[in-house]
Length: 417
Image 1 (cartoon, rainbow, N blue to C red):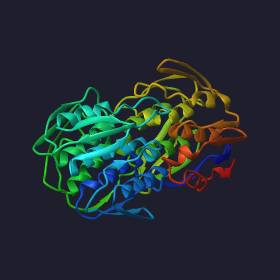
Image 2 (image 1 turned 45 degrees about the vertical axis):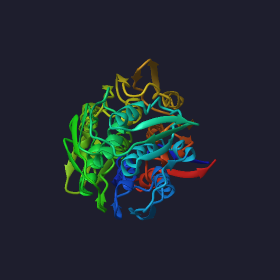
Image 3 (image 1 turned 90 degrees about the vertical axis):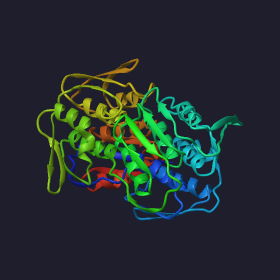
């Protein structure tokens, strides 16, 4: 098992190129069974979850190749309809193959996702919505067994704006008979990227990026080429890296417009963010001061940036608070930050952060993907050495993070435990 060893206290200077978005790439790749022609994807990040997705596509009968940042997918004349537990348990996004399989061949057998380190992510909203389109489900030996003739268009109102549910239904509706309206749909940019990909394949979709999406089903979708959007969470993480180390970074391929809530909060804390011909420049514009943050569905402050901004708040003047409204168990990084000298208390959904003058390196353990990133950020700013265990979480969502950081001046290495 790998760990990252960081000798902190070095300001970061230079240029970092932002990779393709993991959260956009996963559903776009899992939409491949919908197409009856070959697909070529560009700007695909080389991440553990991407390789897991390609393995799942292979199990479903599609052929895939991955070279540099490009993925080629060749369709299968006959699809396997089962997503096995061994894959689903390692990547909950695997459940997104449910909609495409039902839409394409009227049958799907997908392992029921297990628990999640950051809280429950129930799939009941996906199933209830697909039932309105004519699907019938049974739970057999830990698997969701779904079947239908051809899905029928329906008017679906989500109880809350579920990202995965919106993605699954968006894909399923593309080949359904008639019109589907998704109301109270999630508005994340990654959903818009999925919609644009499906449109490029011949789907008829409007309203993506708003809370009401309309899909008119078509008989088939063709192949084509598509470039994945840049990763806004990776970009936000490197923005914090520049600020927490008192550095000066240029971010290439940075999706600034999709980061409005993060940029606004960082500027409030004293971080300068400006567009330049070379990219987006990040550096402190004044002394860091604390702020209050509440995570919300897009376009609000993303829950996937909560742990990272908490690391920055640990070294800001004064006191600030975070209210986590998306997941009920997303503060497991707090005790690890406290090991580094942070002053944080948690009460229910709320975390209260009192800034301190310095953090001190120590051994810490990552509990999930974004918690891993927060510990890396804290380690970059801490005095002494920080050793982060269980960085396989980090590899699920950040492409070559230690390589990118070392390239801009960080003293960071990957080692075996």
